[in-house]
Image 1 (cartoon, rainbow, N blue to C red):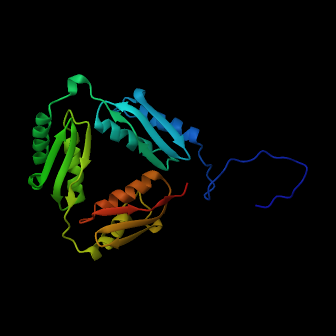
Image 2: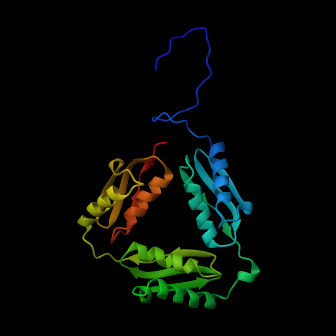
Length: 239
């Protein structure tokens, strides 16, 4: 909009994006992330610090379980204006919850057999000082993710590295179509704003979305396709 120059002065309007919505300041984002952490009944936010710079959130401090660490990052991604998360929260177990590694391994094996009865024999768990490493091969990414979730349910686990590989059986040319169809069915992803490229078993996502949560949802949907081994998420956020 053009404005003629004159003697009158007007107050500058807040910065806006291309859709006309006011851009959020780092202070506003920090406040809302802190509120979101307090709103979650599964997290004790008293020992969690929040810092924001240019929309990038850094979480510091410590929690009582690895699941709480993961939940804190998930809570932060729901806040409007967040462009990225650096999760530097440490897991500090109370002494009463510390367990010998052999006990942790046995319970993880039992959890894997209950969660993934047809794939558990192809997954191995290695535990050292409460840190779990999962190895092996599965066909679907959801199996890889469920194995991690099963391990994290075990008391005494302080961290997890998921090295399970996906051994695909689907033809690469089918990946692109399956993911595009999934986007069209998904109410949280604007399929017209996201493009899909498939290079073998690697998927590349491009386009723009309205929030970090929508970007994460697009990536989650892509991982659900059978045989996907890598998702390169190049989607940008247009606030």
